[in-house]
Length: 382
Image 1: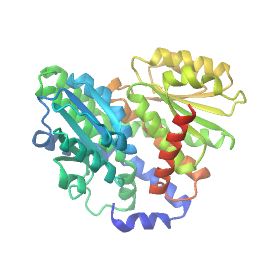
Image 2: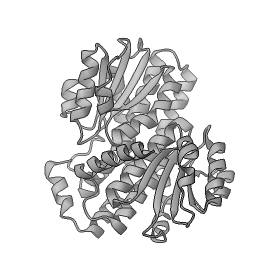
Image 3: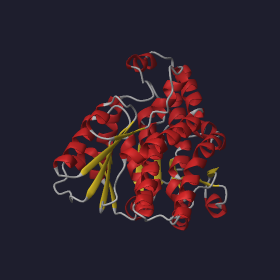
Image 4: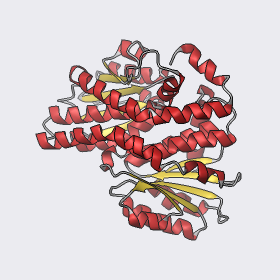
C-alpha cells in the first residue's frame, strides 16, 4: 500500500470506508487467483526442503494465523513435522535442529519481530525462506522470498483496500503452494495426489467469490445482536487459525469482548463460563473434516446453555445446520484448504462490526498491539 494511503483511509467517513471494504472483499477472489499464479511461477527457485526433518512457520498477526491454518496442510502434504509459532516466541526459541526449514511470513506492517525470528533461525544454522507482500520489502532483502503481490499497477482505492484486507488469504495461498512443492520434491506426494492438491488450490478463488454471496446475511445477523453480547470464535485443526483471525478482525474493528478459543479447550475449560441470557454469540468454524462430529456435540450443549450458535460450515453439513441457530453454508473444500473459504464470513463480520461499533480506520498498528495484549491476558485468565 502506498505510504499515504493509510493516512487517506484515516480521514475517510465511516460509511464510505465500509463501502470501500465491501467492494474490496468482492475483488479478493480475483486477487487470490493472481497470487496463486504468481507464486507457482516462483516456487521452484525459492523453496528447497528436500532434506528438512522439521518445518517452522512463524509470523505476527494475520501471518501467524495463516501459519496456524497452514500447519495441517504442511504435515499432510510434506510428511514433515511442522510447528507454527508467533515470531516473538520463535525468536526466543533456544534449540533449533540444524536439519530444519523456517518459513518467516510477513505480509505487511509488523515485520521487525519476524525479521528477528528469521535471523535467529539463520544464526542457528537453519535454512530460512520468507513469504512477503512486496519484493522491495526488508524481508525480501534478507531472505529468499515468495512474493504475494497480486501484481496490480496503479490500482484504484478499492484495490488498495482489498490489498490491505487480503494479507491472510495471500499468505495462506502461498504457504499451501510451498507445502505442495515440498511434498512433491521430497517424493511424499505422487503425481495424482499432487495434481489433486493443485486443483484444490486453483478452485479456491471461485469458491471465495461464491462465499461472499453466501455470507451476505452477516449484516442482518449483526443488526439483531445486543450491545451487551459476548463473541466466541471456535475452531479445531486448520480452523483454529481462522477462529483467531475472526477474533482479531472483530476486536480491531469494534473493540468489543471477543474470544478466540481452540474447540477442545473451550469444551473442557470455558464451556461453563457461558452466560445463560442468550447474549453469548458462539461462532463454530466447522468445514468438512475430522472435528465435525465433535463440533456438533458441543454446539448442542451450548444451545442448551442458552447461547446463540452460528456455524460456518459447508452445504452438505445437515447435522451441523440442524444444531445451529444460524448457518453460513459454503462450498465444500478439503479440510487442509478450507481456511481460504471459511475466512470470508469473518471478514464480513469485522467490516459490519466496524460499521456498527467502530471509530477508526479498518486496521491500525495500535489496535494490533491492543489485540496482542488482549490475547496474552486471556491466556493468563484461562
